Each structure stands twice: as C-alpha cells, then as structure tokens.
Length: 142
Image 1 (cartoon, rainbow, N blue to C red):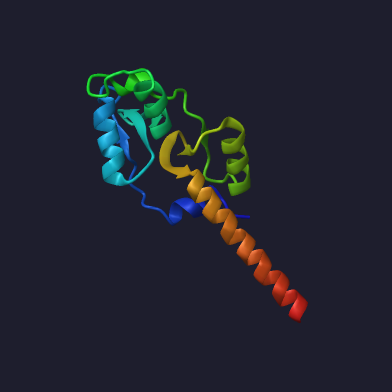
Image 2: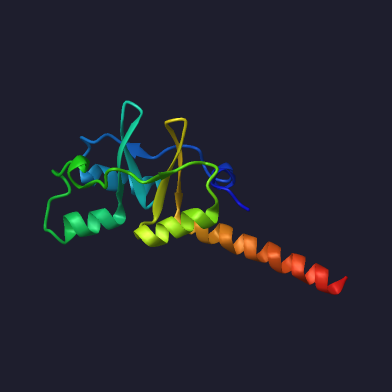
C-alpha cells in the first residue's frame, strides 16, 4: 500500500504559498512560476485556504472580477480539506473524487508538510497496478 508520505518523498518539499492579502493576479503568477495548479494561502505558518486554477476560473473569470485588485482571501477555498502523511493513495483518491477537487494539503502535527495532486494519485495508482501485473506474471510463469 502506497502512502502519501511516499509521494511527498518523491516531490519537491518546497511549499508554494501566498499571503491572504496577495492579489489573485500575484497568486496566479506564483502558480505559473512553480508550474502548479494551486497555491496554499498561509499567514505566519497557519494554513488559511487554498487557491486553485478552478477557483480562478469560476470566481474571477466567469464573474468578471479583476484579478489585479481582488485579494486571494476573497476567493480562496476555506476551510482546507487536509490529509495526514499516513493516508493511503486509495483513500486520498476516493476523497478527491467524492469532493471533486484536485489538490490536498498534507498536515502532520499541525504543520503543512506538502501538497498532493490528482496527478500524483493517478501516477501512484498506475505504478501500483504495474507492480501487481509484474507479480502476477512472475507467479504465472513460475
């Protein structure tokens, strides 16, 4: 069983975050520089929310709001659904599917230690399936 902590070990450990007072335009710039689809909204080490490309599309673009003047705090998703590092990939994928979101903050001992995406989950599931196939092929051929 693959755990979230295994996924985080394979990723960059740097958290991509902005202050709640940052503009949406600034946050989108941070996402672009880090090539990620979401950014954590944090203040003094406390997780306040998360902003995703989907939030931007639905709450700025479709509503005709100005990203250059709208603070992230007005459109971020909050409270943030989080998981612990010992959650399984399967549990996270089920949660993401049920709640219809693509990013999960990972929290351990009250501190954010990373973010996992639906892409991370799909990749991990494919790896697990490949391992199972290899084991079955080995079993059949022996």
